[in-house]
Length: 239
Image 1 (cartoon, helix red, strand yellow):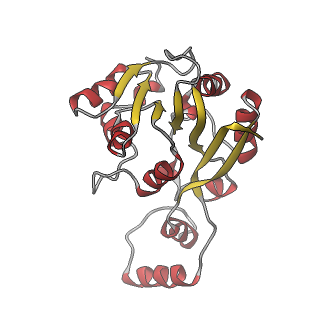
Image 2 (tube, rainbow, N blue to C red):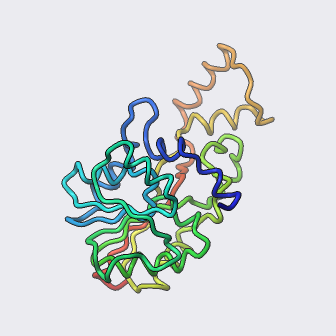
């Protein structure tokens, strides 16, 4: 396993996409799936520990998950998650006939794949209806607030995406209609802290600082910064 892959621990796979306090799927991600996934058949490409597959099955879908790493698929087995799970690499031919699934989701995966164009081509091949994709966004604010937003960046990412790049990637493989929007907004309190502490160093907050921070947050909306871009690809309609 390559060094970059070794940073994917089993513990990360168990918690990925889930609220560590409630044990539930992150609300924005759950809303994305509820709104855009159409069935009955769904593929989760790069399913990790299988939590999303289980979630979809509990919503009434016939869900299948594939992942490159067997250690992640073992989590689904250990937790007795609903759904079908197979080992497969998105940079190779997937073990499904053409147009096998009504929807294929690929969430926080393409940025880890060596050839994202090959991966998109395979996802489009096995899907007859819709692709739901989420990737990390390349954004000017991400650089400006680099310390405050550090928890939202991942050293294993091979690339980040702009809306234009993501659209071009999808439409280079299939001339489909693509809707792109921001997903998972960064809490403004992280940005306010970075602006009010010019050195960018976290320090013990005094009561005065806390009050000042609350005042600024109540008066300023700040920029809307999203961690991810989501793309909804309608394979039945040309772009």
